[in-house]
Amino acid sequence: MSMFDDIPVEVGVIYEGERIRWSDTQVELGGPRETHKFELVKVRGLNEIEDGVVNIIGKDLGNMESGRSYPFGILIEVAGKEVEQDLEGVIERRIHEYINFIEGFMHLNQRYDIHLRLSKKAFEKGFNSFSLVGKILERLYKSEMPFIEKIQITFMTDPEKVANTFVEAEATYEARDAKARGMKDEEADAFYGCTLCQSFAPTHCCVITPQRYSNCGAISWFDGRAAARIDPKGPLFTIEKGECVDPWRGEYTGANEVVKEKSLGAIERVWFYTAFGYPHTSCGCFEGLAFYIPEVDGFGLVYRDFKGATINGLPFATMADSTAGGRQVDGFHGVSIEYLRSPKLLQADGGWNRIVWMPSNIRDRVKDFIPIDVVDKIATEKDVENIPQLKDFLTSKNHPVVEKWVAEEEVVEEATPQEAAEVVLQQTLSPSLSGLPLTTSSFTIILKDAKIVAKKLIIRREKREGT
Ligand code: SF4
Image (cartoon, rainbow, N blue to C red; front, side, top):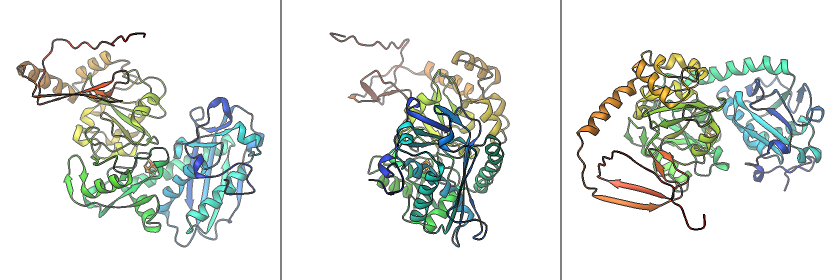
């Protein structure tokens, strides 16, 4: 049932997760076809904004050509005696949730990377103006965040206005992110959790620490603290650290307890700083992901905006499917760009010494945070196109992983075959090999206390009768 009588489509939580295909799309706002798109929340003084005003700069929904994409910006200005600047990021992240409540309106991603679609069906029902979106946002914000006393919303589709305000938005994001840099997990009195993405990934819970930014890249430790203070029972909450069980992998008893509770027992442990064992879960909103490349025993990094195939031949979207869903998948790990600036980035796996490939634009963005002796040893799409070329590149640059290859080869040569003490064959839906899921097989083979030396490994697809 709709929440509002004066809105021509339904509005409610059941529409969260609704996907709108291109063929059903009336208009697309932002998204991969547009360079400039953003959403931004700014805290203003109580006398600086007018409550309930919705501005539209550029074409409104009803005047847009059907089946086209447009540059797009949303600026939400809020004021209130209790509204502090640290809440900007948290209020901004709610845009994703609230717009997804609207039947026939889809919102993906965050900040500079938003991607919205309005369905033809919703448009035909009369949902044809941003003023309707503004009304819904205003009402939801005021009811869910009563500390917001005034709210003024501006939608922008004029290309020049979007491009100019985009610059201001980027400066704001950078200032927010920079605030937590330099602070250590050990110095924090608590961590913060977020379950906003559980509508898409029911077992996912972000644990936000000073050195592990949220997967979406939109919520910092300071944002989490501000949100938990003002609305402790909300989707952002305090996590008491408890005991640090493993500082290297980043395991805390307090985080384990909360993640277990919030995932309804599906996730029992979480290690913040590794992509293996009990890695932090990934919802689907991650800005990018780290993927293990078994051929070189290193990691690649790829981001949502990277077009085409990565070094392992798979595009971002394919690997995102393997990573998302609130699961712990060995070798696939959702990350934000800000997390790349953390000294604890995948520290238990070797950190930057284990990163072998990443898109050049991201490398340039975080260059100052990559150790100087590794930065030029990481290949990009401009250097190599496939795994054999990557191997040659890493060898020629003497990347730190090369040393591991040599050490591992020596161990293999020295090893003598031994009898397996225990072999377990177990039927499962998503088995894995070297951390990579195999979707065509139907068994996981677990060998305990075994060393196997083989000259060749042959994997054959079984032929079944009648197929
Ligand atoms: S990715 Fe994490 S922090 Fe960001 S909205 Fe989702 S659950 Fe919250």
